[in-house]
Image (cartoon, rainbow over all chains, first blue to last red; front, side):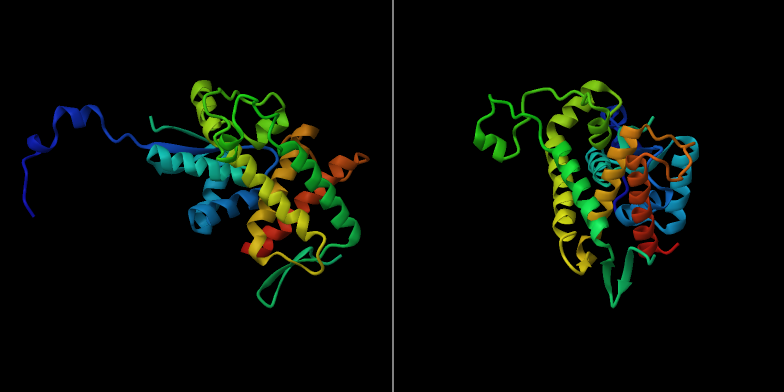
Length: 95
Length: 173
């Protein structure tokens, strides 16, 4: 593998326009059952039961949770999928 | 009363009596009517509408009806971005939800009801039906989940029971 000096790799442009990740947030609601929310996280994201349950508790107790991080288009696809399941999700830049 | 959903020989079976089927058919019809697209824009030619381009060019604000706004929620905090995203995706989301309802509507007339390949449609339908009723009832997290004199409230509880038992059958209690 060729080695390139960092100064050549990091031009000012790439540092000014970083690949800022976006996040998909799921918000708490009083209607969806906790078991169902857990199931959706397992089924759609392929998360383990443990991780899905922990995210569900975050949603329930903190009012929302970041369920995925990545490019904007993927986060929009995830939010739409959540809406198809009846969960309330939004997309935003990861600040 | 036996469980309404049961895995038997690798198939997910819904065991619902005549009255339950009737109630679910009623809920399906109500949800379908609610999700049907609003009056189409006369400026959009039919061919464009068929291609799902009906929303192009117009802005799509958050729906006024809180039930619709909950079924088709904003994907962004920022109203402009939310409207733009809605313009591009709302028709498809409506269509997906309507397709789920149509699957359930057809299956409640079958006997036995084998939902193995349609579990996702059933789950999404149950979730949407509960959102419709729960939003209308103004459900809060502090509400006690006990039957009352209000038939709509009891229907909401019944659909929650179906959702809970189906999820349990899928991932264990």
